[in-house]
Image (cartoon, rainbow, N blue to C red):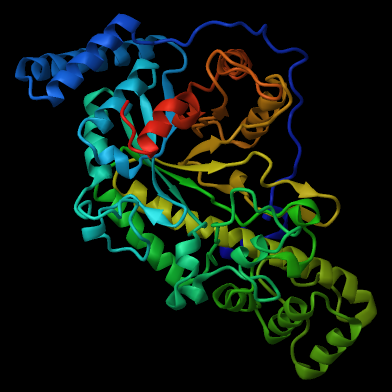
Length: 497
């Protein structure tokens, strides 16, 4: 089974996709569905504020109102496309203030959303109470007096009370700056052929994009330390009983310019000790293991290398490794004749190995979630698995087309071309590569009722998607901070709303 999974032909899917329909449906400007009327919003806000001040009658009326709105929301979404309309949400320490969670959840219901993806692990911190945080990451709430506040445990039932499904959304292979600074976690970090981490190369001006990613640190997915730490954080999140879990950053670090493509084994993030040793072990005989070692260490093999291993292991016919078929290079041919094919096969073995690390890491996490009887999903870029040229690949090596069919697929369809066409192209590519039973939930970015030079309004994107991909009946919008920037700012800095 492992040999088949590592076969070169399955390393990364081909970058072909069905062409778009000749024309997209007409773009309209219809308003979002399932909105709460302004008068009802105002009444709810007034009741919530009065309840916070101790008005028992207002509290009772408020609870009745949110219960009736939950029922209305469920009925409305069941009759209107999409039946699932989700939004991405980050919580802040200020959300621990009385009534803050209720206010943000009420706003989400007001806009017709019935699913929320709560960010629980991001930028090297975790949404767990500091007093009961078993992970190596600091808690989001670190202010004195907040040690026992469990925002995640609080927000989940409050959301369900309002008719919302509440998912946990967490980074996967990006463990963050705080993790990278721990002396006892250096072995868990992904490294390149120079021994540098992703944080090191991010700090090198002109090599990688530093905009917004200076705290990103990616781990070696083969590291037992990283796997153990991630299992710890995932178990802690699952104890809070979310309705599902979404895994983000299921990939390697992405560079810019020339660094956005990997075309040489030394470009791969496979030089962490665990990853490197696992790759060596993919050799099925001594010749195979020795050739892998030489290729990984120098970036190529020569005819002299082949002649040398023939002398070292004269009883073995040819080098073998997982995914390689015996007889690929006849032993009777000269070393110089065998060299080009062997080097090409070693390159694809290395790529397949890097990809398999990502797949194994998210599979372990997804299996753990599904044991709880709740869905898991993977968040990805539709272009993250593209081959580039004859030898190269997108440096993220995000082989999402090989994510589990029992996982939800959440493609971040963020293309910028000023109209929905390029966004639909990204969705089309995912549809073409998905099994019929795979649940696809495109993530759209934009604003209600407002377009920019590069990005159409959410109304335009939604209408295009509805006509273009009728099999899709679930959509998410990134993010609450985009939809409610003033509210998000107030929550972030503890300003009164």
